Length: 301
Image (cartoon, rainbow, N blue to C red; front, side, top):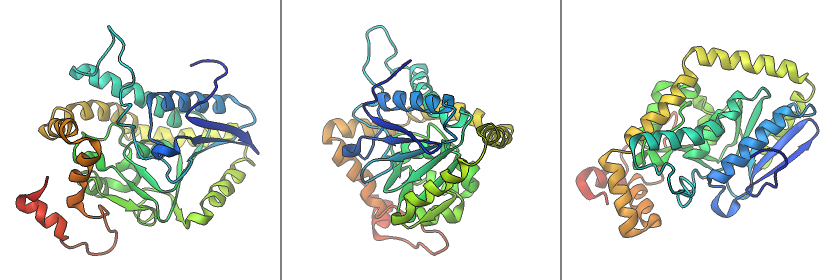
């Protein structure tokens, strides 16, 4: 995708020293398709090349930031004679293709701010955590429930944000945290009431607009280089390979079979219902919920 683009699944605007990129599939809670990721990557590099832009604000239209990958469009259209995803290497290759598009948020020189409201789930967290700063509504829902049945996380910056124990707590269960709790564990920089979220993000973008973009780039990149020295980018490549490995598990095979037999909506209901509300609680006892007890006793669908 080169040159001028008529964006179909995102909106792109430049104003007051910032580029706003809005995921624009509100009917799906901005679920990501290959087309959306292609458009997003193009817009990010366009913003990075624009001398009037100091930073990027990434946000979602409608009720959510991003509900994850669009399961009805996952993998895109299969072309004869091209990779299908059936082999282990095909699977890795296709995962890495999407990951490279998301990684533009990390690799671009200018800073990015993720503006999180509503659901930020599964692949939505891949987008958010690739941004330089994450600001969330305090009632946002952030998590990766797909880890319960669909594989491992194809991008994985969680440990670098919230440390290994909380990364494991959330990834091993697929539970979510609220924006307010995400702030407490460092998963997001700040959580604010939903009604002031946009103002908070725009206020930070105002401050970035006062700084020479070359200085912004220098200070962003040295911090990212420090993370790279801690293995952050190597881990992203390994995360894609690890996800492909996880796709060979019995749980993922059972998940695929259930979709064929019961449909996607019912399969997700059966997967998630035993977890109750599906939230991890920070700084308070969680106890044993009746739903989880029944699953432990062998009643999980």
